[in-house]
Length: 234
Length: 234
Image 1 (cartoon, rainbow over the protein chains, first blue to last red):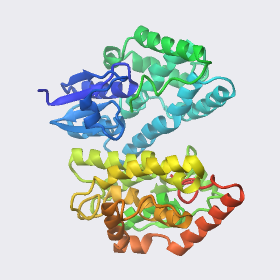
Image 2 (cartoon, one colour):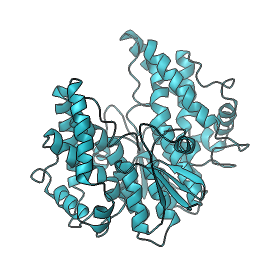
Image 3 (tube, each protein chain N blue to C red):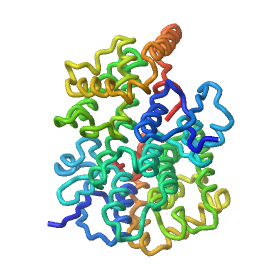
Image 4 (tube, helix red, strand yellow):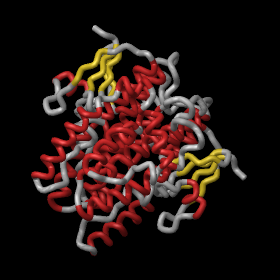
């Protein structure tokens, strides 16, 4: 029995957050790849409230919700690289931007990918306005976390990879290097780091999944579908 | 110039969270009571992303989002009573339930108050299911935080006071002592503690505000209105 288990899904950006954090910290873990269309009784037992991946189980005790898990990992395995800074104000800023990404950015960005017509136009505009705040966050450092990958980078992995893939697939031009040069540089830097290259799901696999979903949505009259970035996860 | 300023609104449960936390910690602060229908330029400068109260400004640096502010207060003024426990797993549980309250409970509970017909019935059912999770959280202790008021109690102040007032006003029977005896006991205990009695807005004032809003909504065809618990705050 491994001490650390992660109930996740390889294609989920939320699950992937936890894998990246555990790898950064050098924590060994057992990965349980959940079928999001047929979740295991253990997952439902560990996360009766949300019934979603990821769930981290440490010494038999479950922790749910990816932002909560990331802080838990940082506080439990202190010896590895820090996901959050030590200074209370800087920690507050990390929490603010992580929350901003999940609660403000993700819903309209995903809607921009999966809706059509006026709804899509509105979601594209909203996404653009929100991305401007992120673009303004960079000040000469490689990552949101400074010189090293931190919690905000990890939380933003949806933007750097999942969104870019779906944007390309459906022909959107929301997050481009021309419009957001600093975010563009960050994405290159982030995706080229070893930890990300080794742990993100293959691009062709994600593309195939979203291509199938997009075709199904189009066949059903366009729009809809999607969930949030690779199935029921949080 | 005070070192600690709170841009808030006396009637907002979100703003009230911060006042309770600062009072518990014994931190002196200047309170700026914002008119939520005409927000000050300073508030908009300090919180350009959400444009909402509460905003805590400490030594000139702003912190937004009440959950983020609560953690900041706990980490900055360590000498006072702790809002979060020290153990990483228990801290994760506090963060989980705080997030649960804000993201899962609050929207349907507020919708149950301000909607009508089928939408209201659905919101009532959903609220009831969610409250069952909270009811199951108590195990012989007075507060969510154990023997003392902690972050979850503070975050749940919407439920203990604002919701109860509006529920009574509009004639709902969602959160009652018969259905949720442990939550009922917690509400009594919480509202009777000195820190809450001294810092919550007067019941008749809140009742008058919501009465006016309810009448306006009814005149406009029922439902709607509301925002989230006392205006634009978070």
